[in-house]
Length: 55
Image (cartoon, rainbow, N blue to C red):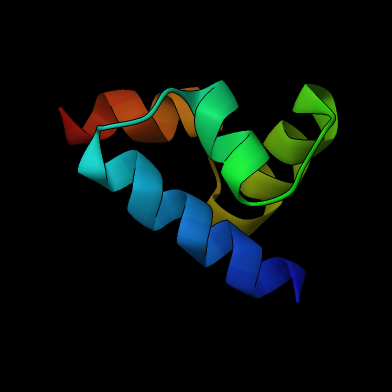
């Protein structure tokens, strides 16, 4: 289930419409640190790094 949420988060970040914190809430995470840790484990970079790499 977490893998699906991480993929959704990556798609939302790629769109560039939402901030990292908005994406975190959209995919049902309430803890920023935990979201970042899970995202980094899934993609090898933090959500912020992922977002910056796209632009």
